[in-house]
Every structure is written in structure tokens, then in C-alpha cells.
Amino acid sequence: MSDEKQGGTCQDVAWYRMEQSLDDLDTAKLLLREKKYRAANNRAYYACFHAMNALLALSSIAFKRHKDVIAYFNRYYVHENVFPREFGGMVGRLQMIRTKSDYDDMYVADKEESTDQVEIAEKIILAISEYIKEKV
Image 1: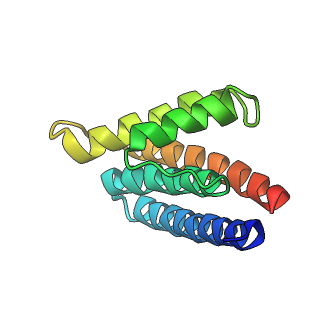
Image 2 (image 1 turned 90 degrees about the vertical axis):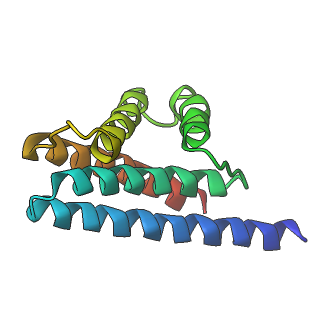
Image 3 (image 1 turned 30 degrees about the vertical axis):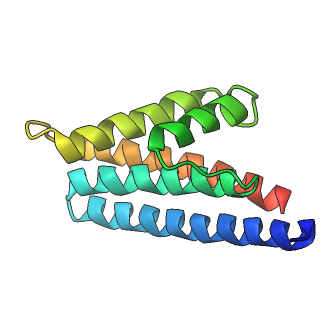
């Protein structure tokens, strides 16, 4: 396969994943308005996760495990100052709250925390989207 064809494929996958990301972000906002805070936390995390996967697609990189995607994002994009250092902690928080929301029976999600989760996801997604636009 030629580099041109392969590059187009990587770009297509990146944009497809960004569409997933934006769809999940819209869903998180809708769930937040409907006071479905646990579900909003889940969709906020996945919106960010799909955006990180979109970024990795540009380099033909894929992982099966979430922790590998996050580790790669932190190592090659956050620690290399492509994105602000604070993004590493923000992604970690998104993941932690999503895990609590999905698996901790005693966790009570609230409006303030869920609003914060959606805003964090949106900030990261916007930055990743702008980066991808510059690269393609």
C-alpha cells in the first residue's frame, strides 16, 4: 500500500473517531441536562477516549486497552508538550470518575462533578481536534 493511500486511511480513521468523540460529548451534555450524572460521566470519558484514539490513528497506532491509549497519549503528547501538562491529570480524573460511576455501587454522582467532567472532556477534545486539523 502506498504512503498516500495509507495516510488517507489513517486520516479517515482519525476523523471517524473524532465524530464518535463529538457524538459522545453531545450525549454527555444531554445526559447532564437530564440529570443522569453517572451516565454523563461515562460519556464524557468516552468522548475524550475516542479523541485520543483519533490522535493515535494519525500515526497508525492502536491499543486494545484503555490504559495503553492513555499512557501513550501522556508519554508522546503531554510529556512532549504537544498538549498542556494539565491534560495528563485531567484524563486521569475523567477515567477515575468514569470508573466510579460505572462500577462503584456507593458512588453518588452530582451535578457539579459531572459538569466538570463534561467541561474537561470538551477542553481536551477541542485541543485534539485543532491539532488533527493542523496535521491533515
